[in-house]
Image (tube, rainbow, N blue to C red; front, side, top):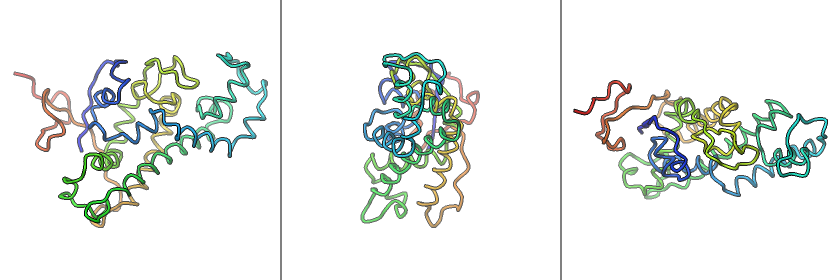
Amino acid sequence: MKLRFKILETNRTLVEAKDGLYNLLGVKPGSLDIFLETFTGSSPSHQDALRRFISSRFGSQIEALTDEDLPDTDPRGYSTSLSKVKALLSNGVLYWWYQLFGLEAAQLLVRYQVISYYMDLEDAIESISFEGKGYSEITSEDFAKLPEEDKNIIYEKHFWEDYLDSFFDKQMAQASDTGNKYAGGAGIPSGLFGTMNDWWMSTDGRGIMRAEMREASNELYQQFRKEDSAEEPPEQKQPQWFEKGVNAWDDDAVGYDKREDVPKPS
């Protein structure tokens, strides 16, 4: 699997559409759909599950907060600052979890969301079937015959095994304010070109998210490891550069490790 990095100006029109975001990322369209739906989408099921988890684990602590526990903060559309902060905590806004409950609590909520994502990815992998064979039994010849949506699920699994560190260093690190009105973050730059739902997780807490993603990716690798695969996940790869006009997804496309090695147009 090949990953191209493009150095582009953040364009609000582009990032508003999933195809545009894939263009910015330089990643095969469709190959991160589950991740993007979880962390940049607006799926009610993900938000509802997070709220239920917070309510069951921390509901009493949130209700016990008083005005004296809060730093100065504008109510911004709420009747009081306290009601605003309680609502944002209940919705999982990590900046306020970090401010009021500390790093350990914020990390727990990052871990919950990352594990939820990997459970969705695991379910998708387990749904893949070709002539009675599951993912771990599928050969490269079988893979070529899979429907595109199944190929993209496999691409997504391998993407994190190969490019997780590069993604967090060069993609997630691209913070921007694209006008998203996500809870508790209006006007604040968010990671992944401004598309991440939780700005703190993708900026100040990016290292925590990376560590949780790496651990979950390694566990998923072990779960679906084929008999002829290495016992440990593969070493992280560096993305490659391609000549202008070359389709990086073609099997015979030639990539270059350094931008300066790409032949100049004649």
